[in-house]
Length: 136
Image 1 (cartoon, rainbow, N blue to C red):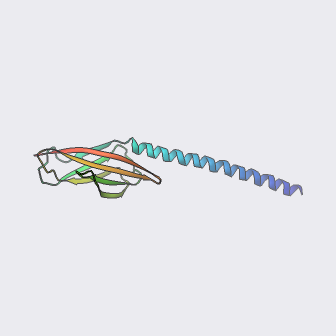
Image 2 (image 1 turned 120 degrees about the vertical axis):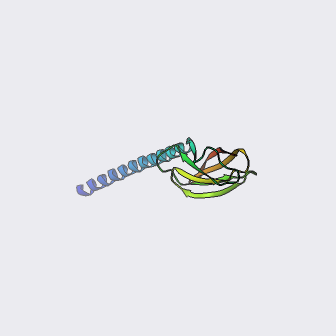
Image 3 (image 1 turned 135 degrees about the vertical axis):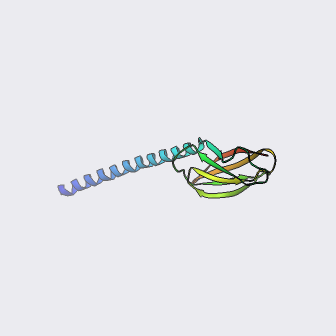
């Protein structure tokens, strides 16, 4: 009879420890998720062009780099059109950089408007990318 009582106490203690560990795991998971969201929402995006001045109506290659050297949570990239509609141009990226091809339509500064959208399940975080390239 004493043996069974010890087993019950041991089982109850193990269940209690499991519950404590599950709570700690949940807190850690939430903390990691918040850290990833903060990293994304506070990111800076750097533009790199391969020429200082591009030609009007000629395809220009542009590289966009997030200021973090490691991969990011999956994200999509949308081009923002002149009428403010969005056009999906890249889907499911995770690298901290992406290449974009843009054709300048006029002399002077040509605006590039993109939106990166990170999906965190029930929450989406948008990081705008506004830049321009010079053409003649």
